[in-house]
Image (tube, rainbow, N blue to C red; front, side, top):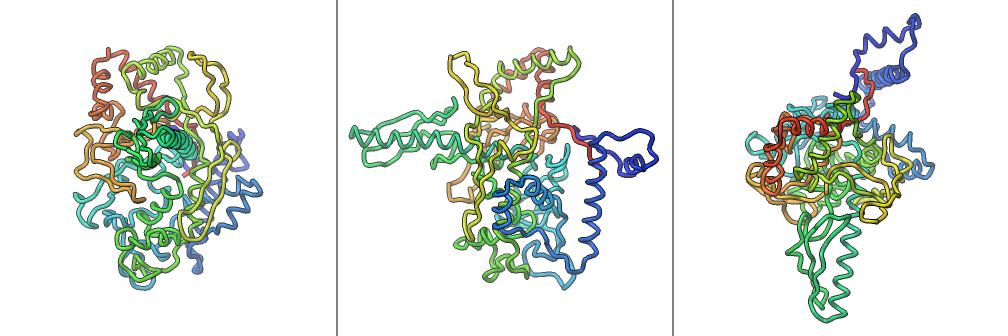
Length: 497
């Protein structure tokens, strides 16, 4: 665990005026944060008028962005992420409980409508430190029948650091693919015959695209993404294209809180995505107008500005050399073919907006608004091919593409995408970003792997050759590779609990 978790009583004793030595400033800040959080929790627990104070309007978000008040924006998002929600604000689905009684939890979700399985975002995103991953007991049971464990799809809760930069990468790759789409359509129209062009972006291969003179497109050779050429970087199968969609769905399926934007978006598919209740209370929990669309934008903004994980080699010189060897082995065995160590973003302004309902839109300049550590634009030197790499290098170790990993990791049914873009086959998975890996056990989509070595052993299909190469490594090289992967971590934090 990268964070130093310190007992509250011990630190509060150290913080007393009579202490002989001053505390590290980080510890003082952690104590102050702990006291503030406890006072806020007590206020919420004892205020009979308290309902859900973190419903923030789009006007407030726009004003904070206009003032470039990133600290206040982050604080609001952090509180929304951490707050323990009272179960009288519309959580869950089905008949409302008697007055004053909480909604019953529903850990096995009911189809796409979800189930009440958490009381806060922090509850399942804290292993390894704030905004971290889930533990082995916090695997979500999605898209089930609401009752049987065997009916559900298991999903491990990933860490949520650096997601703003992942979103920027997706939009840059998507823009490059769209330029190819427009070019091949123009070529086919000008030449009067079908034309085919390779789909490539930042050296990544997305297959080929063919256009006919009448403007039609043949996407049968497109690979790694959906036929609509959208790069969906969120979800284990590449489910969501942006952070607002991710946050909006999470609010419903984990807490039963339906935003006005989500209700408007799925009005035509209410029985599938919202519930069979009356208008304005589709989940039939007795509460209408549970959230504004701006709440999902606030959470998306918070996720967007979180710090990025880091590469922290060992300090011991011998171990540092072994870790450097492990990085070389990472490429030699083929891991880097999918877990591409670095991609670049040229445009650092991230647009966040609701997809339907009331208009809420903000733009975050991540180069300014993101918390530290964050990617820096620092490498304009010539590369071995005499090209010049421009932009912020993002060491996320992913290609943001989907790959068939064979029967070893296959699920029995495809996952239907919620935006109408088709379904992802059971054996196909999005390349998981490896940054922060050291602090995110267990591993794989359902948390079945206790260690990184176990996770590698589960790889098949397109990754079988890399897995077999790992198996064939000399013992020292295998240990060096795992040591390098252990350096993909996060900045340590002081935490009082």
